[in-house]
Image (cartoon, each protein chain N blue to C red):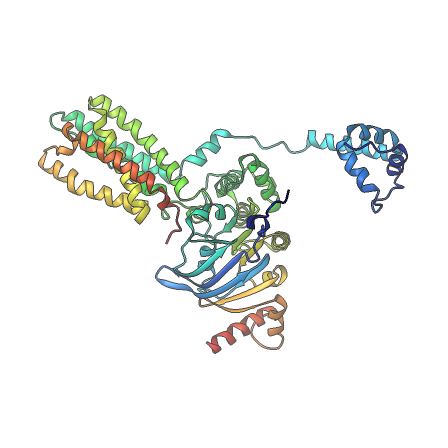
Length: 265
Length: 264
C-alpha cells in the first residue's frame, strides 16, 4: 500500500538557526539597551564582545526568555518567544548562566545542579546521572557535597556553568562565565566550550578578547545596542595588525573596530 | 533470527584475521551482539593472550567498582523540600506566626465583640504570596525565571506551601476561640485566589500588596478604631464569601495561563 508522507515527517528535526532576531529591541529599565538588532546564530561557539553598557547582558536575558522584548521578532529554536503554548518546551532546551547569578547559600553543589535539572524538566530518572556528568565536566567532582556559600568565586562560577549545561541544551547562554577562573581553569573551560559548540549553539558574553579568540568560531561585537561587527576571530586579529590600542593583535582589532563603528555612526 | 556464524568465520574473527575493515566483520559483530550462543563459542575460540587481557580488565573493573567513590546518597526528603519550598518564604512564615498569635492573644483577652483573628485571616497568606515568586526576594530569580517550570508551576507549588502553613495555624487558633471555621477559611481562600487572578495581570507581589493594603485600610483599621466588627467577619456574610470564593477560584483556574508569560 502506498502511504502518504505528511509534512511533519519530512520537516527538519533541528533548525538552521537556533537564534533568529530581526529588529529586536529590549529595554533595561527605562533605557533601550538593545536597539534594532538583527542576529542569526547557527550551532557553534559565538563570542559576544562589547564595552560596558553595550547591551550584552540585556540581550542575553532576552534570549534566555527572562525578559520580554519590547519590539521586533525573536525566534529561538524555531519557536516564537511570545508564543505561550511553546514557551515551556522551548525553555526546557535552554541553558543560561546569568551574570549576577544568585543562589541559595545552603544548597550543596549537587543539590543546586539537581534542582536546576528538575526546573529544566530533565526526565526524573536521568536527573542524578545528568547532575553527576555536569559536575564532572566543570571539574567540581570532589566538591559536589560542599555548600555553595563555602565555595570560592571561581568554583561558584563553575557550579553556575554546571547548572547551565545539565540539560544538554540546544541553546546555551553564558554571561561572563570566565570571571574568577584561574588561567588553568580558563584553558579547561575553553575546551569544554569547543566540545559544547559541536552540537549546540553557544553564546558567550565576555570582556576577555583572548577567550573569544581561543575558543569561539565566530565573534560578535555589540555597541550601544547594535551589532558593530561580525566575523571570524582571525578578522579581529587582522583588523588590529597595524593599528589600535591593546597588548595583542585581537585586542587592538577590538579597539579599531569599535572606533570605526563609532565614527561611522 | 539468521543462522549462527560458521566456525571458520568465527575463528577468523577471534584470531584477528577478519579485520575491522573487512565487510564480513560487520554482520558477524551485529550477530554477536545479540546471540549469547555465539558469544559463548567465541569465548572458546579466542587466543590465550586475548583471554588473559580480558580477565585482567575484568578484575580491574571489579576492583575499581569496589574501591572507587561511592554513589551519592539519595536524599528524598531534602529534594522534596527544595522542590516545594522557597527560601524567601521562611521569614514571612515567622512573621505570620507571630501576627496570628498576637491576634489570638487579643481575642482571648477581650472576648466580647473582638475578632482580630478573623480580620487577619484574609491577609495572612498574602505576605507569603508576595515573596513566593518575586524578583526582589528570591536570590536565584534570574536563574530560575528562564526555566521550564518557572511561572505557573512554581507559583502554584509555592501557593500550596503558603496555604499549608497558614491554614493549620488559623485552624488551631480558630478552634481555641471556638469560631466558625468557614469564617476564616472562606476569606482566606478568596483573597488567595484574588491575588493569583490579579497577579496574572500585574504580578503576584504587586497584587498581594494591593489587596492586603486595601483590606487593612478599608476594613481592619476602621474596625479597630471604632471597635465595631464589620459585617464581613460575621456569620450573615458567609453566603457572600462562599459565592465570591467559588467564583474567584474558578476564574483563577481559567486564567492560569496568564502566569505563563515572559516578565516585562
